[in-house]
Image 1: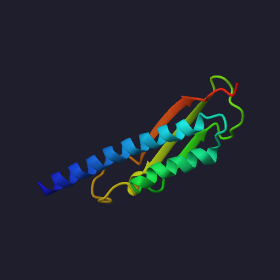
Image 2: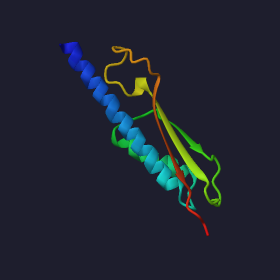
Image 3: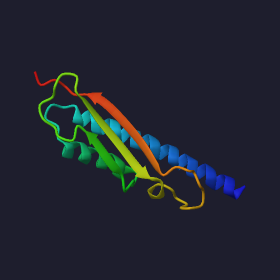
Image 4: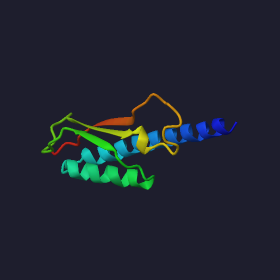
Length: 113
């Protein structure tokens, strides 16, 4: 029964982290669609969101990697991957067969005209 309880706690933590990472990608993409956005602005906003839950070691991927004037219909893709070892409260106890927890958001950039 105790193992079952710990399993539920771990799965609940994973679900909470997945939602937090998804929210962080949305916030990063919202910053990234502005005409004056930079990759540093996006990364800063994402790290602010992840800091709330103490999530560390996140790998942030932003496309396009260079920001300039927005073309109509151009998209911003924000992807975050966090290693499972940085999330779990009971390391190496459960084998979830997942190396990373990840989330991605794609939004269209705002026009500069």
